[in-house]
View (tube, rainbow, N blue to C red):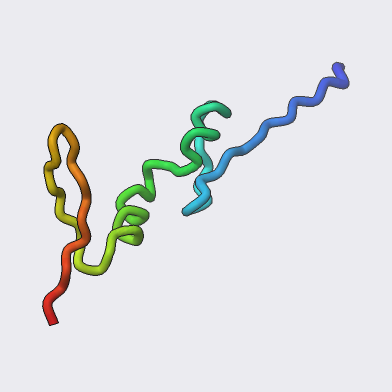
Length: 68
């Protein structure tokens, strides 16, 4: 019998805490899972939503102003 011990580092999404099966480098670049993506996007959007304005080759997000 071997006295070898294998330590596994479990990486979890920083938003929903689900276990992720990504490489350490991929986790370092993006510590969030795809399972909670829609929920995170909804939480990050301004109350009126977002519209996109084209400027040259770029598309720029702008908050939608709610009318009183």
